[in-house]
Each structure stands twice: as C-alpha cells, then as structure tokens.
Image (cartoon, rainbow, N blue to C red):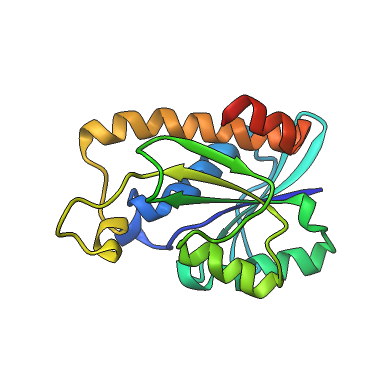
Length: 185
C-alpha cells in the first residue's frame, strides 16, 4: 500500500487558498480513484483508493498545516509503511505559479507543514510533490499570501496544475518516483 498526503488547513475559511493546494490534489485523486467514503482517522480525512493495481490511502490532515506530521506519523505507524511508500503534496512559494517539482527526498524548503512531517518522521527520505503558488507580491507577508485565494486568472492555471499534479501522484503510486520525476519535472 502507498500513502499520499495532501497538506492544507481544514475548514471553509481556507478552502481554495494557496496553502490548500495539497488538499485539492488529494481531493481530485479521491474523486477519480476513491473506493470508500471519507472517514475520520489519524487526525485527518482518509479515503481508500485503487490506482490501477496499486492500493492507496489518501489523507488530508485536519491538524492545520504546521502540525501535519502528527497525522502522517499516525498513518505511517498504523500501516507500518516505509518512507518509500509515502508521498507528501504541498504548496511552494519558491516555485512559479502552477509549476510542479517531484523529488525523492530533501529539505522542507521553508514549507512549515513539510517541516513538521520531517521533524515527526525523523528524516527527509520520503517523496514530495511541490505545487508552485508563486512568490508573494512585494509588501505582502508570507503568512497572509499563502492564506489568500487565487485570482480568477490564476485559478484557471491552477486547475490545470492540480490535474497535472494528480497525474504525477498517480504515476508515482503505480510506476515509481523515477518515472514520475522524468515525466513531470
């Protein structure tokens, strides 16, 4: 089994914000591949999925972004997963809007949710898919920017990126990280 986690913040207030891109990608995967209704487990919302021949657990933590690792750790430990069976999907302000970057491992790069996952799991050796939300405009605080919603023009571009990211996650689950990186980076 594989575990795909979308990072974000729960609740209507944060719906469609830049910080919730991970939730949006996992929601797209659940809509396309889900085999069970959403359940509340591991301090998050869980959907079982089947992507081709691969069983996948889709998880959106409800711990808020900065405590995402609590949910990821619970699911990882319950299913006794290796870190190679884990993919974290999150927003990235250091990437241009709608650009994807799939990696085998690495640092948090300033992303607080990813930083908490690394801290709680004890290492950086898990795959991550970053979805670019672009840098904040001059004069904006980063925290206000990531909690802002996309403009209509940006949303058009982000819809395509969310589709592309869900395809990248599906490829990772079925064909592996190397194939995913070659195809989507």
